[in-house]
Figure 1 (tube, one colour):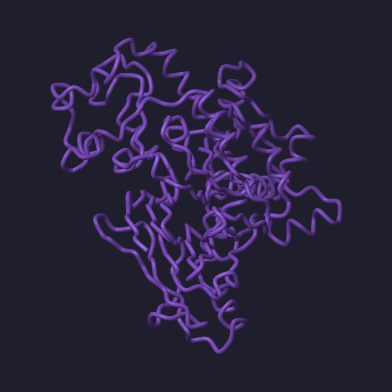
Figure 2 (tube, rainbow, N blue to C red):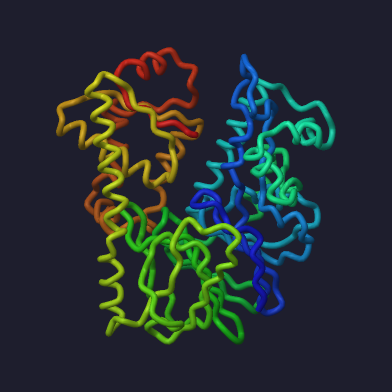
Length: 435
């Protein structure tokens, strides 16, 4: 087995990317975009001078992926919607013929995110017009790069200029549709067999609805790839610890929680390897689960009692209190849309706070795919946490946004240029928008 780290990642929205050579097959783990690099572009044409690049943006892919022969990639594993945003760049290459595996929920949400990215990019074209120059854009010429500040130049080029080749013009809506046709999605609990040699199975990572870790069973050993994970979620099915049993090798790539560490083996004697090729410090503490607990039940209980489980709820409560403070002062609140599941949970909590405070203000959700995002959450109950699934069996709405829309407390808008929306934003309201 050989593992090559292509990118250390930049947090939740740009997960790490690896190339794994296993049993004679070459596997790409994740295919993200570094959307944080878009900060080098001016969002609109400014009236005065600025250090930002004033042009239709290009998009930064995994810095080393373009150096690999796409015909040699046998298959791709995708764990989260954010990890598939770069897939159309790969699937539109003529030499790529590999298979792509992801859960049905990840494919559905990821497709919506890519469609929205294409739609948002179209707005740049309205301001700047399409780039008429063939090949590299003008801002990529060395004379223009030298005009950038050191901070922006580092984002564009990397430390030694090795990241300049990672920039590409955005794919089209047609590229997204063709990419979706090439993805083999797995339903909950489903296994896939690759080339009659490897058995692939996903299990819940707890991070987001449909987000998963991957188990690869080969003829000689079993391998598990752990993506960004949390042990307990307020909306998604929790981390499936029991699926780790019986594996020979576990790759910790981007674990979002800090747990105990005590030796190289887990409670079942499974070897745990921590790939930490440190160029830049990872955003999370990565460590291995130790064998301090007497049984699996004790270990799971210990994990669920971790203080970090309360951290997310505390952050939601803090946001809600800030929302109330602003609304009480007669202001409006603007919240960028991040993790989709958290947005739904946040909507519920904010409205509960508003009702307790006898403060009825409108909530606006602005996104070209707002209706599709809300509807998608109800179409994947098997990936929800136990509390949400119980609501399904009792006939209750899975998420509070359903009642909010019916009662006209939550309004959905695809774009900003609406007179009704503009009035609401400036007159004591709450607004959630795509960043």
